[in-house]
Length: 177
Image 1 (cartoon, rainbow, N blue to C red):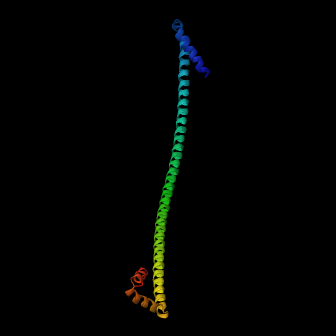
Image 2 (cartoon, rainbow, N blue to C red):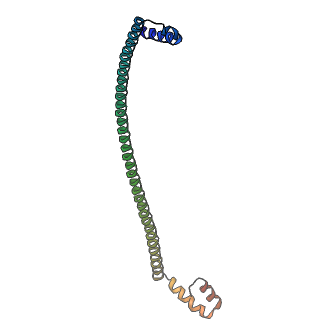
Image 3 (cartoon, one colour):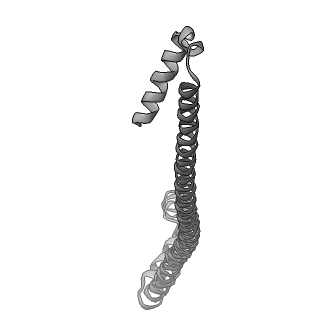
């Protein structure tokens, strides 16, 4: 480093005073050429060292690039795995949605069946009660008519209604005529 400073100072001095350059002796010129040759050699060594350092830095950058590429590839693989997991989750949700839809359809079927059965049971109960009550009423009336003298009384009133118009109207109002 000191040699470089000396050489630069010498060059500045030489450039600044051209009259001194021309007034040099041959020994001084030889000495100057030797110094210049040493400077050139030092610069070559320095440039060689700088080139080596730049090569080392380039190698480091290449190694860092390789490491970054590996990291990015690993990150890309992880993202692909995450994407696959999300696709699997989406498939699961679709399956669950299909199951809910099937369950909902099944519930509608059950509601329909239950409604139909309820309607049928109510209709059957209504029909049964109506039939049973009508039969019971008819049977009761026939028994009353058979057993009691009421039948004879109604026949007698009907005969009398043939001659009595007022009685005929009363019997008609009760559907006995």
